[in-house]
Image (cartoon, rainbow, N blue to C red):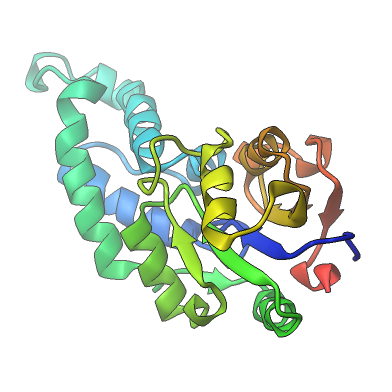
Length: 231
């Protein structure tokens, strides 16, 4: 796949390079157990992941609090609300996620070979994710992908997250490239909207999460079944 004048590549992490649903499932279910709430199913995580950990936790807390067994607990339960539970949930989630980061996750087929080929072409490369930076750095390291990126930015690296264009613009600035010369590779509408607003060309992988909707319906320059199609 050829894009004229591309000098750099920005790559998303969850759902693009690494299948992390297993990590999310374990960490979130341990968190819910700590809070005395029902477990979270994998489909709910897949629909919700991608907009940052705060959104993930708040959305899933709200979903769990609507479960009949929670609503029907009556006076036996303390007053429960997302706001009341969020701070404790966030602390427990950080603890659990960091303790298992990467253990239940797998690098998608073709990812490392494609990164190696792109790096071999002399392209500047950055990882940009809505995942907290510490989580992202740890995952890239444990999966052997950290060495391909000169820059790594997370959802807490800038004032706003994707789909806002700010993270892409700041990443281009850090790489020293113009947006029009910087390819965004992602798996979701968040990546595409951010890229379009920033002026970056964008390619979406077909196997990611995209909030449970087909990624083929998202406006992009191309869609691929493997990152190897980029090279």
